[in-house]
Length: 264
Length: 204
Image (cartoon, rainbow over all chains, first blue to last red; front, side, top):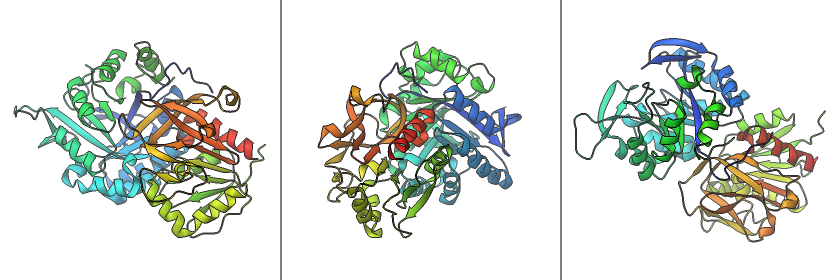
């Protein structure tokens, strides 16, 4: 196996995201009208073969049985992947994080539970290192128009406003030990109109850890913009890959021609 | 048909061995896990020390368990050793991450923090052999890094691979029976597997 190696430095990462419910990969709009799009293990293998740099799995199961199923999915995924993967969704205790990491996940991402109890971040980082602990932030433009608080944190899959300033929350989380930020723009998510560049850039410039941009991915141009103007370290997308609109490799080839450092 | 030797896999108590054991299984390489309190190193089996973690706690665990002394003796006696990430860092005399805590001291030099850029470095970076002469055995390619620190060997001749993160840094070292990677071959796709296979060929 040989790489093209056009870029001889750290590369921007392209990360397909799989939403998993009751052990199946699903697709829906804002967690409703879920449609089964396949076996997560088979999809993971396919994206790895296409040149994905990492994968993210979000467990959106509603039941305890679904959560247990997720541990089995993680174990099977770990057996076929030779690239890193993150698992998130509903992790609220160190014990749950441990189960997923023991099953083979390289990192876990925490969201709502960390807002409710920030110590969770410290617990995971102390037990496994900051590199294992990803903070997922769902951010939305603040409609109440508070000065200096342009983005608000949402929890519970975007259903609940917290009033927390998103950037301040990111800084708090990094101080507690979060090693990476998975930043989703709730305004752009599902629109296919491009990433939120201002949001991404604000995070990337004020936090010392890598930022993964999410929400709004469309064609290669949206990725070029989020890397160049948004200063993202990585970008995540789901439907453009699941729909077969882009393979990971075709997308990476198109981005690379725009001068973005990409692993190919 | 493989003729790989059995590997003594060090479990220093801080990391997850899952991805490295799956990597060895893919390569059909037998191994046994040497935990802090379990059976001693064989002295003949090549030693593999993988994992992420911090320099201080790792050296602490190795010293308390007596493994530090055993690894030192075995490697000095010529047992092949492959270190990955923290398994590379502990080889040196000291680390900026834990001032005052000595490393194994098997290689002269220290482990230093990146001076610029996001820390940790996370993602795929290009490694190239330090010298052209090494490139037949050790090809260039992309590998996965997760690190805040990198080796600064006192003897630059032992650098096997270099990479660029806001400046060149040493990404792997090799001296006699010691080989060590700062990156994660077990997370670096087919290319990473190729590097693991190369080490096994060298020690078989």
